[in-house]
Image (cartoon, rainbow, N blue to C red; front, side, top):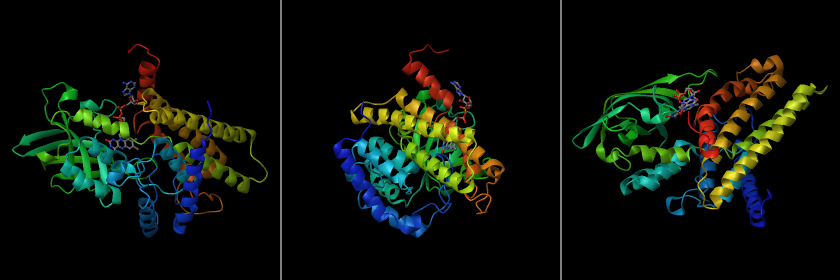
Length: 397
Ligand SMILES: Cc1cc2nc3c(=O)[nH]c(=O)nc-3n(C[C@H](O)[C@H](O)[C@H](O)COP(=O)(O)OP(=O)(O)OC[C@H]3O[C@@H](n4cnc5c(N)ncnc54)[C@H](O)[C@@H]3O)c2cc1C
């Protein structure tokens, strides 16, 4: 096994990093305390003009959605080049554009959407004009998503929706939702669901924010009371929404690029440690940091396994679960190591610069945010079940 880039990949990596260095607007360079750490931390708003400029420059190369086909405005990059581009963007700490719209809704519509949906929605997703949220989880349906109870009842050429979603990230700033609702309560639970596109301005939708323990309100409860939506907004076929949702879940953010982000975080922490602890670090913290750097390399190699399977035309299965499991738990281990490094000052979580906490509260916020890493996108227990049954062939309980 040779983990080095092939010559063509070296050329692409060099070209990508040179392009990023030459095109990333100055206002987005460096960190200035704006970048949050970790996969599920809610990002701090960055300079809007610079972000628009960066988006336009990336789009001139199709790199806002590098995986999308060119006919939809994407970059149509081979899988390995997508991985390299993500790595180089992470190395430069350059903001990426992704999220629910580009990551999941666009690809799902390309596969299952009717022509009018592609014409109506794809451009708005790519340009960032319309934002999307994912209305799947409910109080009684998370890991067991097929237990969704929100009802959509047909009434002529409309459906009437009643029920509740929970943990809906970004619902308060979204224009549209992908909604999973039950359309046939008599059918077996996987066979009575439909997948809708819902305009968030429709009367009858109300939200209430959920504040997480880091003090952010990135996600919401969403309530539906006699919400009417056109029947033509069903993606795929009525009562076959489970299969569309499963495709969306397959597109959920892969963690492969996070390994580079993790390495950059550790390097930043090491620079910080040298500056504020010139007398040296305790052996425990030194060992902890080195151990984390080694584990980041392990995570990268696990990611490369998934990427090389995709490049060879295979569909990763439990291999993707191994990456999700290892990377999200690594994030928590890292958060603990860097928290110890900051000592008592790691408890400062506000963004104010001080001589005691030059990292502007990120040590503490990283620790608080990292807890969610092993829940969102499928819990660690669920990933372990997948590895046990599909990977190791162990019998189910
Ligand atoms: C930061 C964040 C953002 C999110 N954003 C969204 C969003 O935008 N849209 C959305 O729809 N959802 C979102 N979610 C919800 C997320 O998908 C669910 O939290 C997740 O699927 C787990 O479901 P649950 O919370 O209902 O927990 P449950 O499924 O009730 O699980 C509770 C516990 O039981 C364990 N467990 C469950 N089933 C099994 C099993 N079969 N074997 C062993 N253990 C099991 C779990 O691992 C967990 O420890 C988000 C979650 C987080 C943390």
